[in-house]
Length: 503
Picture 1 (cartoon, rainbow, N blue to C red):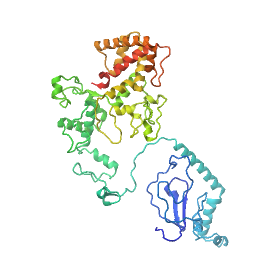
Picture 2 (picture 1 turned 135 degrees about the horizontal axis):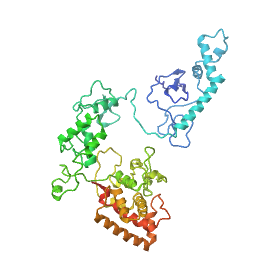
Picture 3 (picture 1 turned 135 degrees about the vertical axis):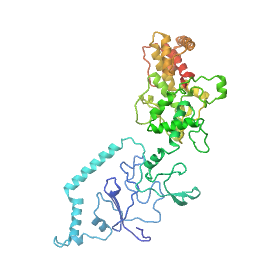
Picture 4 (picture 1 turned 90 degrees about the vertical axis):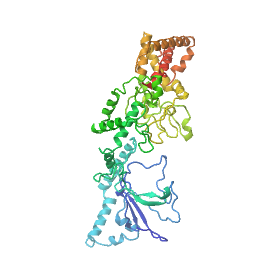
């Protein structure tokens, strides 16, 4: 309905507090206006992170330009839902006198219904009591929902939005409309599939689809071998690299489809293969011939990812918190980094700080420095493979980050309880690397232990740096010099190639 210009109109807005679009109505001059429901998902408060929100605003909005060129007069607010007849009174189309002057017998059936509606909504004690109880229940529900953690999910719209080509990419120059479809050159979209996300999922997993299974197995291969059969795992198109072994890629793709898309089966197939179980050692001649191991002449040798490296030391030290799900965590990081965004970072002070790296809070403008140093994604875009670097800064992180120093301290305390130093070093080495140390490695670590122990005995103050990092408190009854010396040994193992590289 059009709004007349240069003319006073009466607008009435009614809302029954149900948090449903059906409970919201707008009347113009007593006539209900047709409403189009775009979103009907109001189930929590709509405060914008402000302690105080105005109860009523007319002609302005903090994110808008306001109500310009118009006038507002005679504003009335009611504490209940008005009836249709009362809305007509506000628009000067109805009057109580036209009903009040009639006897019961003179009232028409419609007029009796209007009076009954008014009595029910405004007078009836039982209805008012029920409305008060309903208001109380809604308030309790809202207070309960306010404490529930949420994540965003997608849902199909009942009426899809109209989408058009934007001429020259400008949002204010819409062109021809476009509709949901897929590239027919890859695989025509079957007419039996719905044009929504379910249909897209069916199209992607169709047995005749040439890409999905190949992309999946290529990324699995990349995860275990460090490089995919198609090196450009993010691009299988004309700009991507051709597969180094097309027959292998095809065979794995068919295996995945015929297994019913069983990911565990594919993982087991790859890690139990003779190719994966090869020795990762490469002779100088082989390394010169095939530096990236594209010919699979040796087993994979890959640097652990940022998340794996942190989780490995937490697991080896026994600090790991294996809780699944829940809010993000805030591990140790240098102070002041978030001030660039006028924010304050407060590290967790509970065992949440030992949860897996998967749960580290992601702030795209200020990524976690430890994760970023080891090439973790900033999450500003989706990546199927990360860059791989080897910088001095990474060594400094492993040697100084509180997470790694604390893990070394915990391992050092455990080592101090062993009566045999050979056994203590061997256990820690196996925890961090997955193998036993060679005799030469063991002797080097034993010599380091004796050297550090003598140093800490002579200067006990030097133990503080090793024993004060992190939340974990070392048992006061344990010899601090012994723990610190063992912590140095654990840190040395932690920083060795055997720990940070998966072979």
